[in-house]
Image (cartoon, rainbow, N blue to C red; front, side):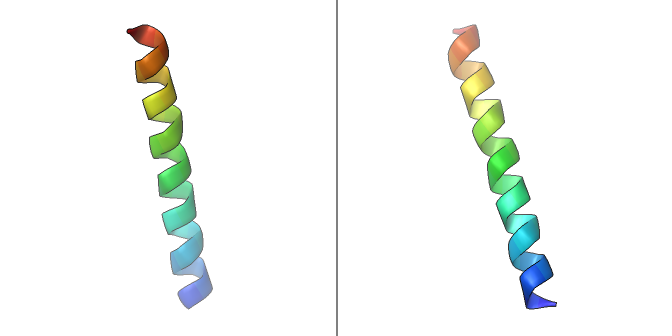
Length: 27
């Protein structure tokens, strides 16, 4: 299912963004 694959990519990118923000705050 192509739409499901794109949704998984979106969720992964969102998690990566949150992790990056946490790293920036911790510096």
